[in-house]
Image (cartoon, rainbow, N blue to C red; front, side, top):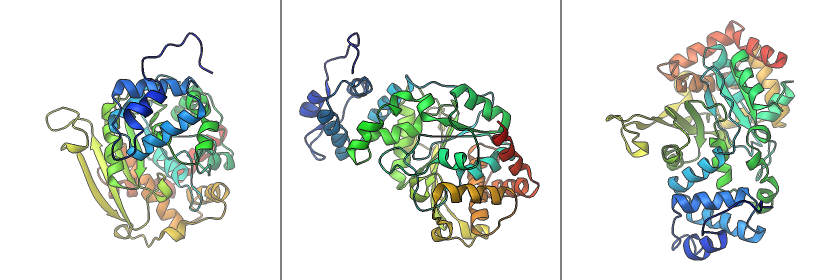
Length: 365
């Protein structure tokens, strides 16, 4: 329950529902930054009753959150995150925490390859988060024998020692983890599913994420711009399989944003510093379809794929998919001028065994 000493403003969730955002998706008003800030502070303090909280989350879903609202929610969350920055500046991979259920999770293998090529990578997840409660980064790493239930400080050390780091949500973001039961009762995704992926626990300057539609990528970029906590240099997002940060085979839309516009200002998604382009895996000599990456047991099979690809014991669809995902990470980190250059770097470190050395180092950490 909320502590007796905690003070709030004039906007309990019930009043916000009645006067601002609860009248339906056509007539609802957006929250101001101050209102959104107070609302999420109340939620994290366990102040609203369950009915009002559920109604508020649904009303946000109906009307669709603005970047200003999401920026406020992100900042309230970040005030409670335990940050641990490594000496390296990694690419922050913020995959959907509620996981995947049909296709392999390729980001562990891709991250190890990128790390071997000189681009440090951080991934983060919870443990079968609502609503899907499917497999995420943690479960693949667990299957590989890598320690995952680390303190944030240990996670930062993992980045510096291996080039790849995993941050565990209950350890670095306990305020969001405490919402698990209430989110589970909702049965649908809420804005928490969006903001938790933007926690950036390593304080990275580059964010890599995924989207279903380009409009969401623009909203994430504008959320980072609206956030008073984050100060990113670069965001790269693409259409991911199952909403995860794994590139779709075939055609994929990619969105790219650099913080400084032509005039030196943070222009956001409407400025010259935002661009979108398409990639076709066939153009890289890859004959891939999404069905080729399907697995029966996501965690166990993804771990097996990771082991085999990094050891150079598997070619074909999975090896190609790992390489192109590693290339996107290398490109996002600014260590390749193009996806093609990133692919060359990825294949080189798989062939010479450097990528498998990263996996060995992770297991020994």
